[in-house]
Length: 253
Length: 253
Image 1 (cartoon, rainbow over the protein chains, first blue to last red):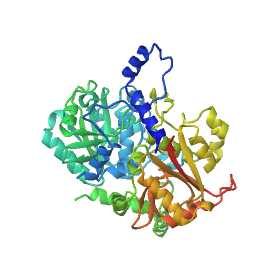
Image 2 (image 1 turned 180 degrees about the vertical axis):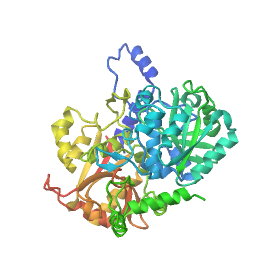
Image 3 (image 1 turned 120 degrees about the vertical axis):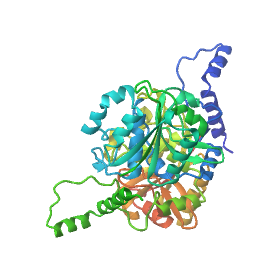
Image 4 (image 1 turned 90 degrees about the vertical axis):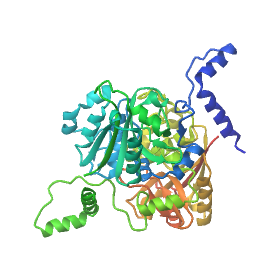
């Protein structure tokens, strides 16, 4: 019935495996001279479930803790540059909380953006230019959030057991008007590759998985990750702070 | 238990009713000399249900046609300027479909943005500068979409009965990998004020309401709208085209 879609899927399947495509082309005696248009996101290991897949959407429907999902996806943004994962995540949470926002001159309305988030108070914590070079540590992330009328409770990976990790975040995700940002090492969950920050939006108890709304939407879709895998990924050292990564529990104050 | 949140809610309630706030201040003998930081969005009439409200989320859970909701919210963007509602809506649909995308230089990845959407083919339909001045008619919107490997079927408001409107859109929303963009007159649904374009993401049969993912997120949240109200709002004339507004049914080809 829909041959065009099937063709499109085949193209995507090829585009997702560049090594196989190159091998095929070499076998055919061809050389690839231009990078083809390609599907947006990088391939995922089998143990990560894409939210938009049938299985990913079933997990969402069955989720026991998804009070944050609709408010966060209503405010979903892509980080504007490769270092602004923490900035984009902060904007999502502040807009989801409905915190009084600065003026966004492009629309003449009050709404948090990855530009108007910055002010003298945030510059005193870390300069915007420094964030653009090295991103944010979890302490800097909490500091920036707390320049606005919210509290951000820091939990380092080295300080929480798996049970504490699962329980603290699950309770937050069951509760409206409080949010979780996580700072994890991508390669510890099977992604490329360094430290990253994004919101967590839901928990599925039957499969013990958390849903990450990855703010680098050009690179990875939202994925379900095993709690233990995600917990391991925050018990890794951020070379900037010398401390382990972790997560923040955020609410209005 | 959470007085800070309650205070914040009170503040929001005040911020949403500027006329009452002004009356209160006047009664107290005070003059407001600076615009306060305010909650993001404009007040809504009672007949529109905000998605993030308890009622709005219940409608989503009970929805009979929401195959497009998760893919679209995973790609939700805000229009970058006041005329780019159609551009932002197009970017959401193309990214949700997984159509092969142009390079986005800010990330060195292939992903649709409100900048790289434009090329010689789209300029031939309507220049980017013209869109920034006057927005898009529904025919121009379809034309831009069809410069990519998708089909966009135009339905003008003057050409569809309420039953046809409801049925065509509902079937689309039940079907994965096909999307709806609607071009409507805001004031006909009780919003401020002119023509607007956004994706529709779900339908609730019990209450006969459609969910609009409004891309001017600085101005209005996603809302549920009565089918008949929305149908009335597309049977209005776009002064640029001289034709009625309407909706597009979009799928990959």
